[in-house]
Image (cartoon, rainbow, N blue to C red; front, top):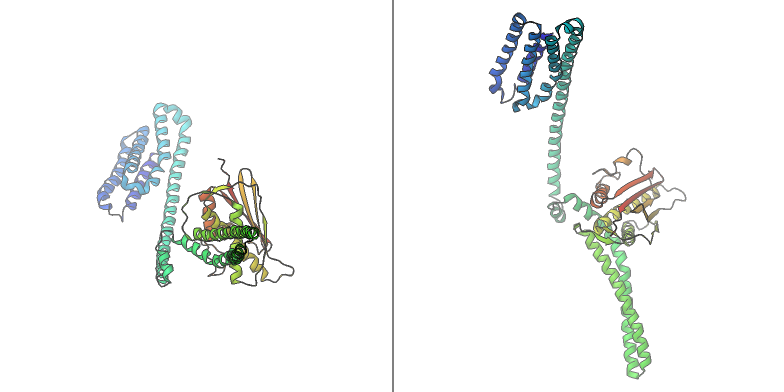
Length: 438
């Protein structure tokens, strides 16, 4: 049985030699490999002719141990450590067989020799099977590495083409490419364009009130001057009261317009990451209407029911308003897109509807955005949060919206986002935000 140890030691040296054959380190080890192979053959001949049975196994096993320990500790052979260490079972069996034969020779020859022989053969076969498996794995890894290099080359070529095209775009896009958060900024500006018409529509209402009450106030001032000239003090006081009410309404609608402008500015600038106590109902209602009017500005024939179920008892939550605003805007935009696509199918009796619901549950604030649109097929439902994955036609979606939404909710706020959908019927996204008790 000692022959198996010499054979293993011989092939281990050959494996180490082959591993470094095309390496710059090979000249350093070439002579050592030759000497080691010679030593293995010499030890085999000497051991076979001059040692008794226990000594034969010990000499063979110690030779293998010497090679294994040396190779395992030498940094130059790190690449084949797995091959080296796979010899441990055979070494252990050899040591046990030699010790048993030395200490209990009668027991060894009468009862245990057969089992030790089987164990040595099994360990030998296992070692070489392990080597074969490792070699096959290394070959597969080498192929994968080559494929990865080829993919990297193709990606580099494609990236170079895209970079060249981007350099030819408008000045605003060129400036955008110089920012540190290129993809996030690009997605943000794209959604800002969608908001423009909605913001214009929303801001027009308070401006109309401001203009109307201002005109009426000018007329009231003229009347008050006339009454004061006539000496009718009571009538002048009454007019002053009306004027005060008008000015209060002007202030109210002016603040409303100011809030819309500030919201637009918050959306357009990079998030500062600072969390603020925020009324989610107000934030959701504002972005729902901005998203709706933004779509209607492009598709004037589009109409949908906006259904809100806001729980007025929900607490304010500590969030980054810009980020959660973008999350809601993205979900609303996707919902309107889904119902718009279903409307184009001209299904009898179909009425587009988007429903938003807020409520609390188990220490979390939940926001549900549900539409009765085209739904999401089951085979892609698990992919929709992946970066660059989109169900929209080329040119209509970047595939970043839901990915950024997931990051903002989960990574940015420690929350969660789930989706429930049925193809052809509905889609519902549920955002869960933790309520932090003060």
